[in-house]
Length: 106
Image 1 (cartoon, rainbow, N blue to C red):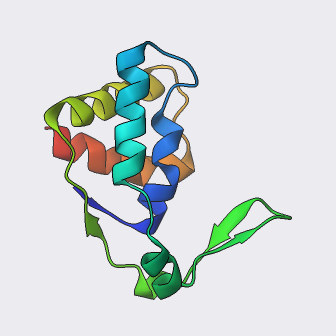
Image 2 (image 1 turned 120 degrees about the vertical axis):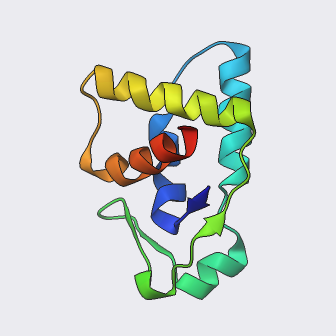
């Protein structure tokens, strides 16, 4: 699945704070696969603003990365996307990534 810096920063928004062992291990595996490398941070000039609690980067330098998710990881993400949607907990920050997850899962 092709994911941008923003996608990879917000992917944790789909995760549960608590869950069973399998869910937490799936979340960990997805988070590790989506980790932004030091080289990528340097390339896009990724910076964290402590005051606002937000990230900024050079979006024109942000080239999507093909993240290889297992079928189980993709199913988990899609189930979480559906749950957030059903519970009306989707938000503007997550919607673009949610649509990518939905498209990849179908």
